[in-house]
Length: 114
Length: 113
Image: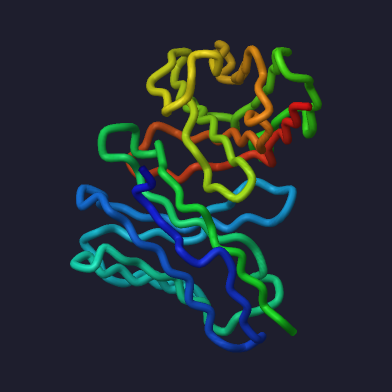
């Protein structure tokens, strides 16, 4: 049973436009969320996180929004750049395990077209 | 500072054999996590080691096992390999700090023929 879901396997965006990647979760006990980015032949790297006490966290071109009532979070990239082309995973720590025992979504392949 | 290193990069085995994957965490990190990424799927949590002990395991059969050594490096062993074990196996490490992010290695691509 997947507790974190990314329903869009792929997304294509023009360079300079906004990329919006979505993630839904089912477990209301989740209180912290992370986004990871993965390039081919590399491990995932941490991008940005948000605590459930916030509804927005911003870091440069990356902003994560959290809607707890809808159990939905989204990652906005503005402006999108070709180097942002990668697979993006949302993740949350399992409440019953270590804070780093993360459950991941299936990922969204973002392609930024020049 | 060296990142998380994994070896080998690629591993080809036949069904029924055993595979051993290795991971060296970032210096100062005591926790090691193993994840499996099968084709088209997200990262599935496999095992968590800290201070030499297995702390938790995901929903995988017992033929997936491992250990953590005194220097905090880790091995993942997969016995009686099955075709569906073909996947990218990622190791990650972290310090024991609340909400500390994971640092991942580049993974071992295991192919079972």
